[in-house]
Length: 269
Image 1 (cartoon, rainbow, N blue to C red):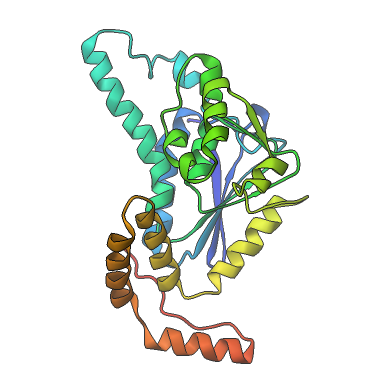
Image 2: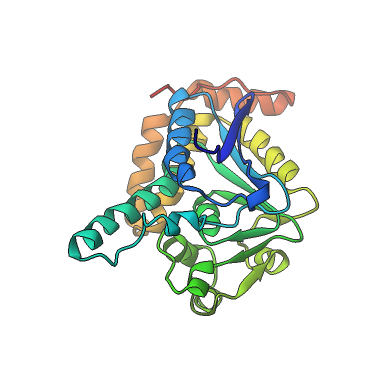
């Protein structure tokens, strides 16, 4: 039986995916890449998850892709043109696994301590919010082992970090530590208990109308790669699609009474 790379639990509308291989710094073994997108798909399909927190057991959040992925030959494109063509699809499979973070309808929040390097940085760059411990650090580790990052960091971090900082990390493998990451706006907060902070944020999200939250996530992601005019047109269509007068009235009443709102749930898919 293959090793379990993470565990998934639920507390009400908040799901928690936790890396559970602290003895190996929670490295991303091959089973992670297979099971992660399936786990997110199942959570999204249920319709009753309003936020997901991703964390790691032990000293480090995640040390990136496990070296076994390279040593077993799965990602070796040096065996001729047919192998190189197949390699493209293998990389796409890894990319798609982390892109599932963007595709789910609920926000995904990372709680980070210690190392967040290589594939782990690819992962958290796809997340919606990031909370870090004082000892957290981020690094594009691929350049330090003779390759370029190819699973999302170089594509998502330009929206999250200044160009000069990203290029230094990409070209020299420099380390971005939590306090500077906070000053640059990459993480939402730095504190002694990032998991508690992430759970608090998730609970706050879960208290909002899920249709409005899902549409807001979609609008923000769309706006990154489209013009203002295109994004305004898209958000008009989104608002028309998800508008719920009971949700709006319920939110106003809940705010006035300082109680939890009762909102239209996401449909199962």
